[in-house]
Length: 118
Length: 113
Image 1 (tube, rainbow over the protein chains, first blue to last red):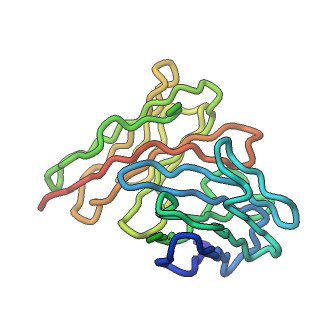
Image 2: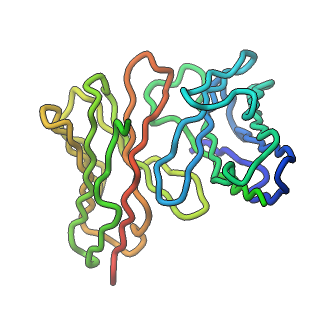
C-alpha cells in the first residue's frame, strides 16, 4: 500500500513555543490530507481537512489560529501548533488520500507524532 | 456527541477462538464503515470495510457484519492469533463528506496463546 510518513515521531517542547509536524505521502500524490489527534485511551478526533493549494477546513471546536495547517504541495502537509500549552500534549496523526480514489478505505495513515508540552 | 461508539474498551480471547468486536453508531446518514487496527505509537492500518448496501463482507479471517436497523456492526476474527493483539477502531463516513472519518473509541484486543 501507499506510504505516509510523519516527522518528527516524538517532540518535547516548552510551553509557549511553536511546533511544526510534517506529513508526507512518499509514493503518491495526496490531494487531501487529514489531521487527527488522539488522547490516551480515546478515539481519533478529526481536527481538519487539508486540500492542496487551498485553506484547510477545521472541525468545530478546533482553533484555526492555534493549529495552522499548510498543504503547499501534493506530497506535503504541515501542522504547526502555535504557542503550545501542556493541554496540547497529544498524539497527532495525519492521513492522506489520492486524487479520484474511490472509497474511504484508500486513506492511508502516518505513524503519528507524540507531542509533549512541558 | 459520540456518533460512533465502541462500548468495550478491552477484550481478551484465547488463541484459535473467535474474537468479536462491536461498534454502534447513531447517525443514520453513515453509508460506509471501516475497521482499522492500531499498534501503540503507530498510525491505524486499514483492515476491512463495508458499504451500507451490504450486510456482510469477508476477507480471509476477518468478517464484518452490518445491521442497519440496529445501527450496529461487528468485526469477527476467526481464528484469532496472538499477532492480532492490538487496538481496533471502527470508523464511519457518508457520501459527500470528502472522505472524513468518524472514529469510535477503540477496543484493545488481547489474544492469549
